[in-house]
Image (cartoon, rainbow, N blue to C red; front, side):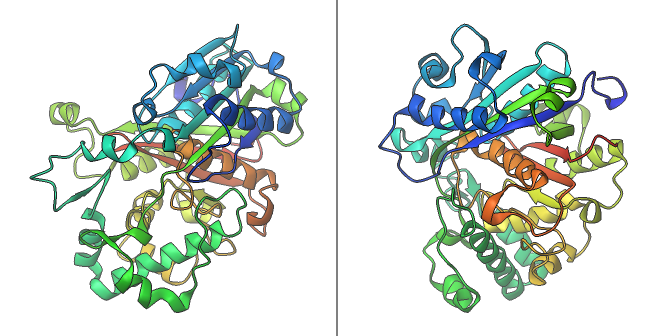
Length: 397
């Protein structure tokens, strides 16, 4: 990809999602995956014979099935085709999208099917995640994969009352969006008059992090079909173009060697690099929607500043003024976000899929009520990994 130019433009031509829920006991893993695959193929007007390569992934540690893609061939349609299995923690879904984009852009394939899924009821996610931290030294800091650090940071900077109300405002906004999305797992019908009660009485997890702030663990699958420019234009009159993506890994041993991103989060570092090479000087003004991987309300609130390169309390004001609502200045997660549904191997892919739906204008009840031309989607996971995607309605960059 010389000078950040792709060998070929890549379009998203098919999207499929299952309903997300805490338990899908009516189907096994291949059957659940097949729901999303069929949905994506129908959306694109293609058959499985049109697909040349399948890219498939999940957090196999959580279901404790080694090389699940071999079994899942029954549902993925990968039999006799080139196939890849990828796992990168919470970023898995984003990695699948990045890999599919690269495989098509490289010229290796014209049509690639990417599939992310998780069936968390069949494993022990909590058991796997809680062993990430030392049970003695980290017991006051760690709650599974998430910590109280974001809350501590925001409270120290903006004061306890303002910080807690902003975090809960963010949470209620996400729930209002989730209530519009028929695929949501958690949609409670929260409203503004519950603010004080939720702040005080939601069950605590660790420090200021409460159950209401947190994402769920969900069952579900997402499938997306990517095609080269020529193929994409012949498949659909509404392809969504993958303009660019960037993947940043905070591997501490490497950082000690070259000080690659000193005193920056991977979110901010990725955003700066992506915007710089694409000439984006005002991301809030440029993007029409942002589907963010927000594992908790505290992190979602804090990360807005990093992703949009904001200063001081500009990110807090966006929330307080409700500018991030579906009809606001910069809608964030009109789908409800990760807090509404978290099938971990698919979660990051759902962010890209939902952003693409908004550009196509067929997101359904949670469609933004104005034209969407430019979309941003993020992935998060692993040891502080970030993947950022820029999607476009038109090939005019």
